[in-house]
Every structure is written in structure tokens, then in C-alpha cells.
Length: 296
Image (cartoon, rainbow, N blue to C red; front, side):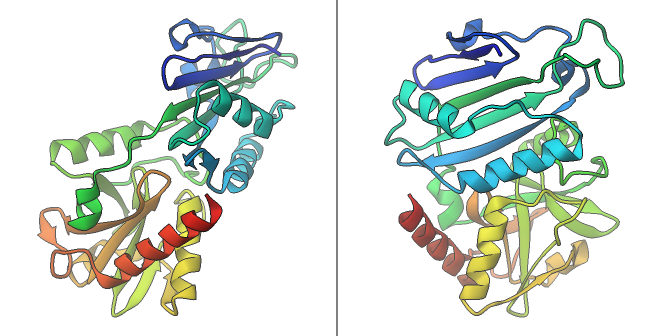
């Protein structure tokens, strides 16, 4: 089992393709040109955050990684993820830092290029990258973010956290060009999720979000937000919102590993509610902060 890791200031990468372990600068870490993640997007990934050096819901993220692997019949190597995490955090001096850990696993690098699975004996490629985290600007939480709607043209199994992110890339670029922070996917008139977040709407005091299933990625922060909303005594419906509902919504907010709980105050240039972060979003953001204080 070959394992590579790098440390360049606050950046590191860890690769696993079978053999001896070694650490190297990021610029020296490589994968073969025939790696199936490169050729086919045949792989999965996961990202979790460190708050003051402590991982947030790492177990849930690793469970999702294992689920994604099962769904695409990708055998994960016998790797001690927790030990790898500790090693990378230590190597990068992130013991008290805010950072992210990125894990990627591909179906390996066979000699040739064929669409079917490679023959037995081809080991998965794994790398883990740790880097310092720069949170979104405070103004996005104080004043609210803007978003655009965008057609959801992704494949039919977005519940698998796969490397096939081209539709997300195109949607994120469209948002950037529109001066927005996020793109909200719409499929057959229904809001599904964001290009990098889950989306919630508030209408008539009821919090709604698309149910888990093949059309969204079940977010770890999404799950926390739903739990917190119910603890706050709020009505929560896991059912899709219509794109047309945005005109009547009093609040819209996003959840995600990077976003945490982020208010959205404009969609497609039109204000949501009064055009300011709403009280329910504010309550949930405070409650999420309390969870972080307890678990970090």
C-alpha cells in the first residue's frame, strides 16, 4: 500500500495506491495518468471540518464515504482513517486550527483505459488533503447571501458523493458570473439543493427541505439543522419546495460543511421576505454555534 502525504505550509496530501508510506511536498505528489478518477470520474470524496483542531461529526462523514463506496461497488482499502487524520493534523500543525480534511478514493490505475471495472489486483487510489480553512465572509451571515436558480442536469444518483461534479462546476460559475454566492438547482420546477449546499425555505413559519433520496446529497450539516429546528419547536417538512414558492417565502437558508447555516436574502435578483436574514435562520445559526461549542 503506497501512501504519500505532503506538507507545504498549511497544505498536505495523502495518497494510497499500494506499497510503502512516504511524505512529500504537494507539488511532488502524483497519480498515474490512467487513474480512473482522472479518466472517468470513477471515484468518491468526502470533506469535513476541524474547529480548533477538533473534527466536527467526522464519524458521520466517514459513514457517508463508506455508503458512497458501497453504492458504486468501490472497495475501500483497509485504512485506519482516524489514525490518518491524526497524523495529518499533527504534520500540518493543525492541532488548534480551523481546517478541512479532504478524502478522495478512486477505482485505481489499471494499465489500459476500459469503461468496465479494472481486473482484480488493481488497488484503489486514496489521497487525503488537509488545509487551513478560511470561512465565508462575516457579511454573508450578517447581511445575507444571494443566489441564482439553475437547471439541475446532474446524474440520477447525486446521493453518492462522486467525483462527477461538472454540472456543479457550471452552476457555480454561473453564480459567480451573476455576482451570487450559490446556485440553487431546479428540476421539473422543484428546488433540489445548491451546487455545494442543501437548501431550506421558510413559508408560513414552516421549514421545508427536499427529502433525502437520489436527487440530493444527504448533508451532515443538513441533518444537524433539521434536528435543531425540531428542538426549537419549529415545524419541519422534508418535502420539495417549488421554484415558484420562492416568491412567497419569508426566509431561505443554506447548510453545508463550509456554509454552516447561511441566510439567503436574494434569489435571481429578487428579495426573499424583507431582504434581510430572518429570525428562524438566526435562531438556527445560534443553535448550530452552541452545538459547535459543545463538540469542538
